[in-house]
Length: 288
Image: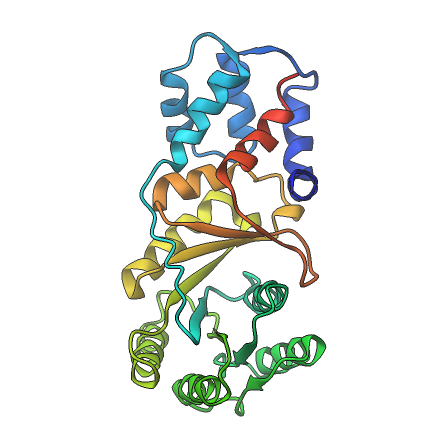
């Protein structure tokens, strides 16, 4: 796990090394502040984290400060529901389709059956891309033509899963900007239809955030949460950015479960997020 995380945060580690090129037993408060800011931790959060720390900071003190960001009550909404139905949400370019393939592969590794629903009927390319992933992973997919009602895809996917006794349903949605009222109403309708197809579903509404956007993705998340309620977050593309510290800002601002982080383009490149391992990966670049 640590090796995967080190790979994922390679560019963040390089950015930290520029600020603090030599690892030490202790760092000054000023050095620690510069490191956190360089890694794209929100300024106000940095100031709060530094408040309780001494002028010369040891690793255990730094760890205890950073880990407090994750000490909030978060409902992970894990259940034994069958089918377990997830709706994947986020703006265009965040990496939704690739993340769906990773999530499907993750469940396959647990010997669970999966079906995909191509609910992004806004773009023909999205349907084609998801179909390619389904074929590559040898899993069924329910799709329709571009421009057709995505709620019909939701209903048919869930109905198919129930008929075939499939464990996991993963439904794609159009990459939509939260300012587009008609699209947000469409998303709400998809959720209502999911509940009609299987009472209480979707079990989880997962928001995909682009890690290269750093802390700026927080406003996106807030808007989607206000619109439909988000149950968890997956952060993508962290291997391609020096903004790995933004996870601290995202966790602090949103207080939602961060379930996975994406670290590459392949289906296996999805790591379950664990706060203590994440914090230690950052501190490994600072302290001896």
